[in-house]
Amino acid sequence: MLILRLLHILTGVFWAGTIFFMVSYLEPSARAAGPDAAKVMGGIQKRGLLTVLPIVALVTILSGVDLYRRLSAGFEPAWVHSSIGLTYGIGAVASIIALAIGIFVMRPATMAAGRLAANISTVSDDAERQRLHAKIQQLQGRSRNALRVVAGLLTVAVTTMAVGRY
Image (cartoon, rainbow, N blue to C red; front, side, top):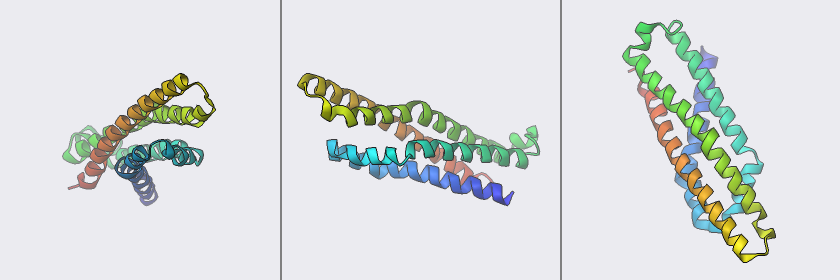
């Protein structure tokens, strides 16, 4: 139980902390930097954050489900419907939804914007370059909105995990 709990907490801290940092500091700074931010964001993508983060999130969720199973004596209905069970359950659902949004909305939009930004310098036609800029901005907006939703859901998850047993 100790190892499982440590795994759940450490991966959860990494996942939520990274998302909170991104929504509070990285994304607003990148947006303010404009096209210059493409190098930094490209570097983050090359270092694999968009691959590592979903894996860490999945480990957090899977370890949490196993902790929940063990604490509930195999999902015993009386425990699941208790205040502790319901509170942890709400956090679990919030984190699962956050992972799904991250994988199916935020990650693809961010990666597509990065690919377009990396190739925009090779486009010589001004009209095409403006079209690509507009597409990049659309994808960045989708990613930004998804990031904010994920941060909100992880706030719910972290809060419920912190207070669930009380």
